[in-house]
Amino acid sequence: MKKTKVITTEDILLKLCQSVSTVLTSATQSSVTYSAMVQKITKTTLKPDFGCFVLFDGGFSGLVVINFTSQAALEVYGNYMRHMGMPEEELAIHHNADEVGDVLGELMNQLVGDFTNKVKKELQTNITQNQPKMLSINKQVVLSVDTNLERPQARRVTFSTENNNIFYLEFAMDKTEFIQMEEFEVQPDECPDTIIEKARTSETDHSADKQRAQNGNQDLLDELGI
Image (cartoon, rainbow, N blue to C red; front, side):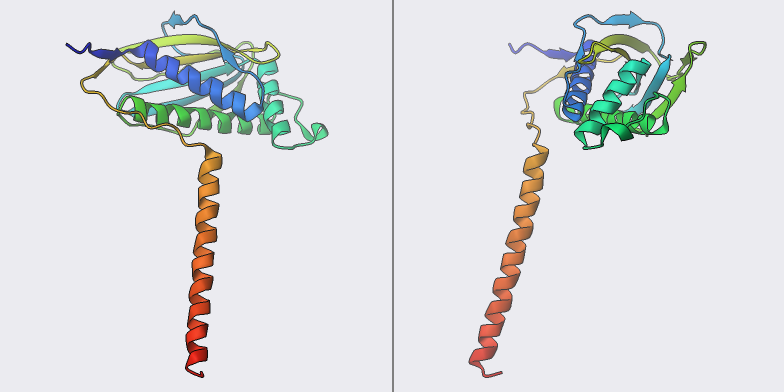
């Protein structure tokens, strides 16, 4: 008899951690890793020096919070902008600069998007996210984020940058399990470079077909003496 596969909160959290690590490592061209240990917590909070959060809903509801130290925020921001080609002298030097928040918000949007894509393909369900929110927080302020979940489960995972700066991922979701009833094939992710190359090839082929059609029409007109 086939053994039933059950996906728990920890399995879903692992997919999220993989998305965070993969997206940030790729975007910054530097190593971003997560701890093999996960901590159970009672509630999610925004903490100093920089807090980001995004809500999602659909097949299951939840919340993703990332709390950066100022050093981690500046390292992630700086590595991303250098990879994008920005000169060193134009980089922000304070973690509460608007451009740091904009970059971290964009990166959070990308990593949660990668996570929702994993959920769609691997759990056969759909979740949608809202626009990430960012907040610079001082040492005296800790904000609790109300998730309105029926039976919330909350977890915290420690992440490390290449320069050993620390930031924390906090994750809350409804208590739920996904039970696999039948086998299905998970489609592999398509490389963005491949997608771009396909689009270029299609455009080139379309232009060539159009040119051939125009040449054919001209040949016909020449034959008719027009």
